[in-house]
Length: 330
Ligand code: PMP
Image (cartoon, rainbow, N blue to C red; front, side, top):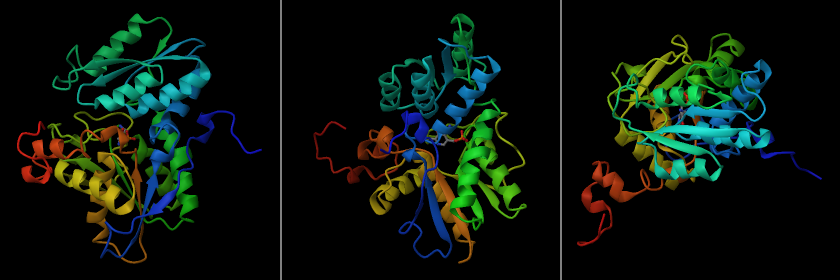
């Protein structure tokens, strides 16, 4: 019989899928690392597992404890899934810009969700960082993984994503592209690939216009899960050879094309990373092998990037492209 003991045993070892249509006219081989095929539906399953197991070993997380984390959803799902296996409770703190679909997923896994305003600075008492700190102090047996400062976040990618890519491409990868949120993915994967290739592999960060990584000040943008208004400890400032800034409009355009033309129903940060990849690919040759990491699936964004009315309301689609007729409530 072929089975695993628990769904958590399926984290990692995601496939590489060639992009064929959005890359038309470009010479390098472009491969997508499809992270929505993790059992919790995103790349964050990797860090959840490693952060929890490290906290168990260090004694920070004890039997029956509660995991408290500010998360935009994906990390929460990973943590909730691993917590289920190990018998921990979860309380997640989300900014209000996170889609309701995503919050409902966390609740479905049995987690408690606390929503905080996006439009306050990180030092504000109601910011989602501060609310989660307060909950950690108030809940007995609480432990905060703190994905923005936990070295196990980049370490999980150093030990899983990086070696997988090196093996899957037989060492032929020349460029790695990923969006930067906590920076864990790019820093851990990037460090492994730099070491394995003796510095040959180029690491390219993709960032929403307005975020600090591409020289912004944290100006708001709509792509979820990437970009920051501060510099997290989990981001290694020396890892990227280049950072490419991408607008919301371009991120969402490519996100939609990935579903329609490649059969990849993925989130907005995937469109952003692929948009940066296409910029890079214009400057690359036929021997180059570019891998772009796609962090999550598109089901959590059906009422946003895949909704014509929402797109039109933000000016990403012309108002007459919604297919709506006069009198329709948009
Ligand atoms: N995309 C999405 C949808 C995410 O949730 C995250 C994690 N915040 C990222 C990209 C960025 O990954 P990382 O935190 O490893 O930089």
